[in-house]
Image (cartoon, rainbow over all chains, first blue to last red; front, side):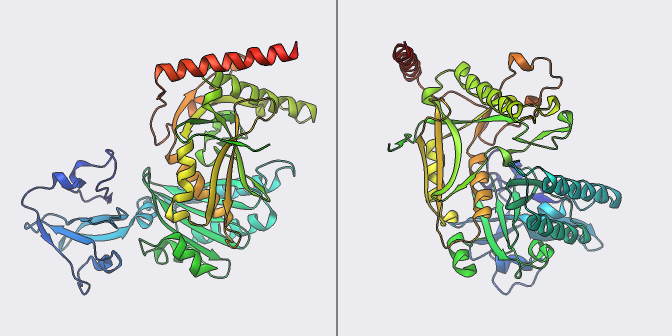
Length: 237
Length: 219
């Protein structure tokens, strides 16, 4: 059964998934319960999961909730976070990108400072490369990336890995070894991408003015799980 | 001359040459492989381009690594010619990752990448390399976030990759540690040659026949 630690649910994902999250191996005493839209439990996020979201609860209250999604729109992007408090196990659901960020939240302040020090140094190195270097970034990209790095640092978000495609963008990447969250930052736009090895889970595009803080994206603006890029492109053109 | 499309079932290789596929490259010993830098995209008026190598003209592991060694050697020569060569930053061939031509074309049919109107890979000899192939992604001209599209392409290609086929060239035997130790296993798992023995044999024979023909032409 799930432990009190934060765990990513990987139902129907490749064999790296912990066996307790595989549908076929659910214990027989697990009771299926469909949560309606108006459910007001600690899993209030269910309204964002669409009609194919099912939550499986064990009759014994000492056990944390198990959950997974079913149907053609199955989306393994939600994680279960369990903690033990005065009321026993308290379980909340969070989306994968939030989990990617939050699972590393226990890092110390000094470590965070060190990480962002290195990140800023990397950005400075990239903008200082010689003109003919393929990996040199433009000043405007450097300014945008530095701004977002400062915002992320102020929100105590673990520093991302930095990569570049060329002069016009910087890519910030967080990974938990399974899911990847990318922010592609160019001078005037930010593209967010959440993916698993199987597929792209979600994409969003923002103009510079639409996304003033990346924290808003990481914690609230990137929730709706099954949006196609075609839909997004309509929204942001 | 029209480029010859590469059949879906055929394999493609992307060679990793230090420092390009790595981050933190100021000191070679601190460098780490970065799959997001596996492919360098080039913006052209007709789309986003990148280079790969076609397995059909690299029929054995020896040929695959020969291509990578020549690539590193050409880059080092270029740096020497421009006076920018530095031993610490010399280009070092580390190995190759594989994916299929089908994986490229699947990108254009991915509903989450609807801005990509064409994803093609075609045979295009370049710098004397018969195995060179050209990747081309055409993006809807009204789409304003092509940099984000590159990230998505790279993400999908990496997840469709297998390998690496690591290699240490004779000229790099002195390096300790050799940067190839930092290559990470791709999500598709270790490289395995999926060709049947007769296809492999046919490709080897054809490759040497082409070499012989080229030699006779030169003579």
